[in-house]
Amino acid sequence: MNTEWRDFLEQQGAQIESEQVTGFDNGGDISTLAEKTIIADLSHFSLIKVSGEEAMDFLQNQFSNDIKDVTEQQSQLSAYCSPKGRILASFRIFKQADDYYLELSADLLEPTLKRLRMFVMRSKVVLDDVSNDWARIGLAGQQAESLLQPHFSTIPAEPHQSVSEKGASLIRLAGDIPRFEIHGMPSTLITIWSDLQSQAQTAGRAVWDWFDIKAGIPVINAKTVEAFVPQMVNFSTIGGVSFTKGCYPGQEVVARMHYLGKLKRRMYLAHVESDSPPDAGMELYTQTDADGEPQSCGKIVQAQPSPAGGFDLLAVLQIAHATNPIQLGETGPEITISDDPYPVSNEA
Image 1 (cartoon, rainbow, N blue to C red):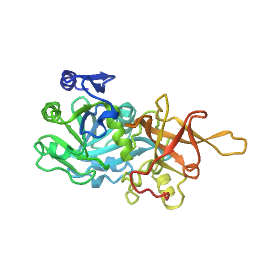
Image 2 (image 1 turned 90 degrees about the vertical axis):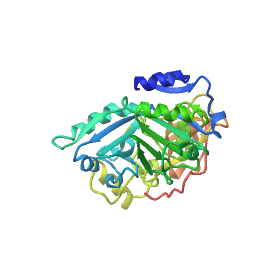
Image 3 (image 1 turned 120 degrees about the vertical axis):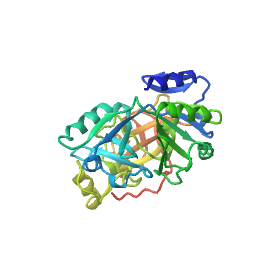
Image 4 (image 1 turned 90 degrees about the horizontal axis):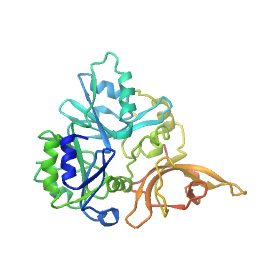
């Protein structure tokens, strides 16, 4: 976390652990903030800058989505896959001038950067960790759009659209609740935050992640690396995969599932009443035989406290067992499947 940005957040009462804002002295939790307009630090995401005259071609050969569609006016979701089609990292990709920026879970920064650099070779491409040079904030709530109008001449109207002004990028996110990310120099974001916090409630990481969960937007972290192919986490539904672009690592597996296979697992929104927090990567079980022995049928993608109590979560489940009783672990509480936040097909 940038020192200037960290000092500023601490002056605002931020509680910071392991370079991430867990909450604020005068803030609340999701039970009090779900219906409010909130502002959150997004330092639990890291940022990789990709520059050079061959940057687009390099990224096009690495990721699941069509990088040609990324402009200063359009961001996108994408995945970095292993040769077996399993997701190594998920990204939001946006552009400022000629440079691309990859936003990913902070705990995957080092292995992802190391792996990408292995394939640069003689390409005219430079990969830099700019996580500590930039700051990142999120704004969510019904007033979000009006609060941003004094700071940007244009507010993106559709999910994934972006605007770059005065060295800052404003990106609209998907979901029923208006949400935006802002990326830029700490000095710029200090000015924006100082204005916004007079009308928005400060919130920690858990609250922001809950908004992602309710919108059905998965984030792959260190506990779910290589656990899913893109279709399992609905990336083909939410615009994270192109089936018409060229080759990339794992493309044959992803394309074969799309054109020839039938999807056996997909991601669901769910809820559980539990005394202990469910964790990403935790196994889910159902009883599938006469003896009543629990069988693994899925895995948690991410989970956070719910405004109503308990926990809301995204989980990848075997479609054939999604209507069965499903529980956390072999002996844990039963989860309840919620309505999907967007139309989902069981086709790959």
